[in-house]
Length: 312
Image 1 (cartoon, one colour):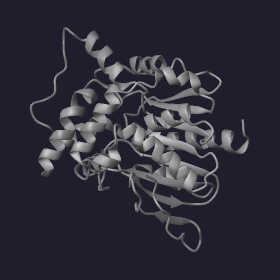
Image 2 (cartoon, rainbow, N blue to C red; image 1 turned 90 degrees about the vertical axis):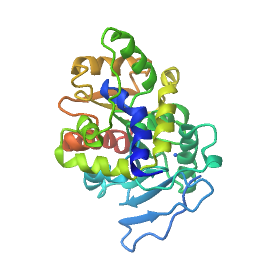
Image 3 (tube, rainbow, N blue to C red; image 1 turned 45 degrees about the vertical axis):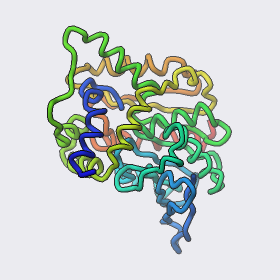
Image 4 (cartoon, rainbow, N blue to C red; image 1 turned 135 degrees about the vertical axis):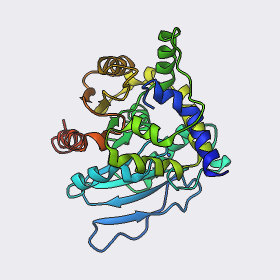
């Protein structure tokens, strides 16, 4: 499949979703750590090869999971902010940004379920003590899923502009706009899509580059799974702290910041207030790490200091 076909497979599933302003992991084996224990790399030699992981720093373990068709590089500023105090396990998921796609056998019935179990297997094999899972978009969905299903294995989760029920929000938006339906454009412009996901111009090409390096079939199928997934009933099971960070400009120009915030609050309404809270980036689109990196890193640092150091 050539690059154009790959991008069309990806864009045909995602373009309408993004235009409407909707937000859109077998474990790996460790190699020898670097002499100063500041940097380590993990390979993908396993039965599943569900992801590649790079490890940086020492301290309490934090897992950083990027979104659909994104690489570990999206966490660059967060790594710089946290590496002196935490051990960061930085993922790139199978099929995205140059990582080999999952085989049909490894994929199983669901990429999302397979990745959740693979992350838990990774935590066990690496003997990590209740790490905090930080995820963006698809990674945010996985963080929420792990928080609801495996509170005994993770210490908390930070959901960066992810949703528990993307398809539901899509359907609701379509129903509200029956008089002026949104349709996918006849041609696909990856740069235009990147501009819709970040205000920061220096990020547009890197977003496109990750798309070009991603497997189009994986991107399309995973987006399809996200459109059908619904974590809302499980949110009531939260027993670990969770922070959701929303980007209020993600829906522009189709949704106002107030509508975007209301959608988040509605989708996560069943999460117990003692375990879940929101914070919103007023001037950011979907890639908060591009548009508001200092704010993002401050929010993450405050959460970690509260829940990993003070133990509240």
